[in-house]
Image 1 (tube, one colour):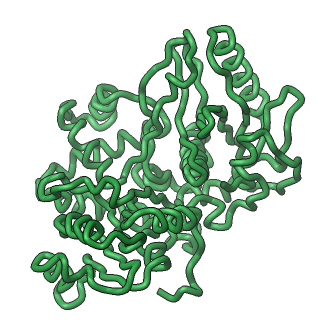
Image 2: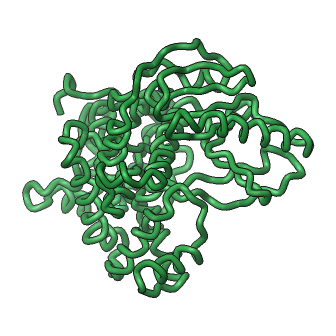
Length: 424
């Protein structure tokens, strides 16, 4: 790659910090999200295991002599190491033998089965999760509002500019794939569609050499797309496939396929937030379903920009997925974590960010500015309920909005911030 063409990523700072702390760093995430480019930017030599050059000679060399491909100036990039799983132990052994920091950068777009990998790498190989680009990284967010400062209750009111609904739809359909940023709006859905084809037709088999039913995998993926940004159970997914596609799939198969999707970083679910509240309120322990990028759900639903314009309910769920993808990227850059909240009284908080100091912040996500009042009232009601239950209330409450032209604090203390003005 030409370094001058590199587009900075939020994860860059974490990569630098990890290289200064650990002997090796493994950057994991979905294919095409930019792992190789970022790793190459931070390395001084590299070997691409998945390269087809010379009839895949790099892979064959790694299979014959894993230690040999580790030779080179450090940090050395080992791209798509999972193609030859013994490389993990070779790196771990080399780091043990030469106790220096920042020797290797590994990238992986799949988590292989443990067979053939002797050691976890704990203490030697640190893991970082990379995701597709946030709106700030792709240039669609002005970055006028820092999420870190917002979580500390700091916000300078600002006009952030008008937002076109068609632009938001384009960001969702196109996704945060670096190779798709300059694609014309009417072609933006082609790359996510091809991504899914590649996963189903090739990657699913290569992860463990087990053949699976591609038709049932597509049915399950379509069901996940229909239930994007919800907390549906595996049983509900089964019933959804039966009701909509008139096909049957047993719950064991659903469980095994979901595990494969997770190992391929195709899904990126949002965990529930519960014990930290320490309240008498009973809280559900269900993950919120997400793809690694909302564009994948669009591709599965055949959701073109024109179709989404006429289906605002579906658009609302996909917009929520877009915001929660970005919130997760921003929050993890400063050591915070993203969750969601849902109790048995059907009270929900779209996104919860827990900070290192134990404080937590509550976010509602709304596409239209006309929904801000309702969202703020919901946050205030849940805060009151947690207070009365003896729990720890949120230290900050915010409505993330799509079609808002300003970032400000309301009289009731709830912040309002457009997603197109947010950064880490």
